[in-house]
Length: 332
Image (tube, rainbow, N blue to C red; front, side, top):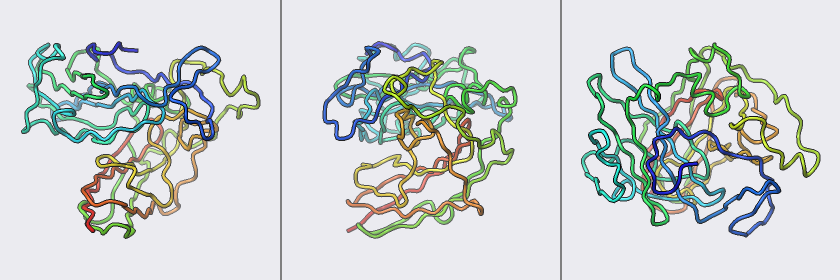
């Protein structure tokens, strides 16, 4: 774990542990029998630089995500002085006291709503072939602390789809070489990417997703559900929580207060909730439902408060991701 206030140059691995769902728990934190803390609230968000890979045209794709150290507390941090990108020379923003907020470049597509725990490979920033040793620096301020992630083209940050799969525990943690050339799911959202709807009025959104290489293929979890308290609190066999393979699709709130948004049907979590029956691909029993036969995912979204929201559709095969956004202006 990276100490608070220090430079976030290390790629976050999945640090999740198996925890029991405590019905009605109101405590700020709980402790498991292994002596590790499970913080519900009061912890920080740390932006994470996941790595980069080259593109055919000579440019590069940088991947970013974050770690919210809470299991329940979510944050709304609009793009601005507490959530911004800066372009810097190498090491130019190592001093966390330096304020580098510039309106013109602050928005590089980062989230403004932060779900609990690990949210890896959530968005990308494209950089040109001549980017050199410059850095795209993502600054996030929570709980009175400043943390930064430094996007740079250092050789040890080069990655490929297999590295991505490993970081998210994809395909039950498999290291199959076929993952190196794994293709992301195809994804298309029907209709205009900008919508307007009234408070309380359901908005239907239709998305089409498929897996062009049908790999990794959907299959059931090889493990059994916990039958005892010892099983319930058992530690995963590796440092990364395993996730199930197979095509899935979910909507999340990317910008705007998620507490005012209702999805019907309820969407599976896109964040790495590893608690048993946590409605997450990382939650035992890690069951991935069969996708719709026509590849058509339909959801009705209702908003309780006016404002502008960005919804992000996430298609995944458990190892690779595709995204599409829909911006919704909600009126009275």
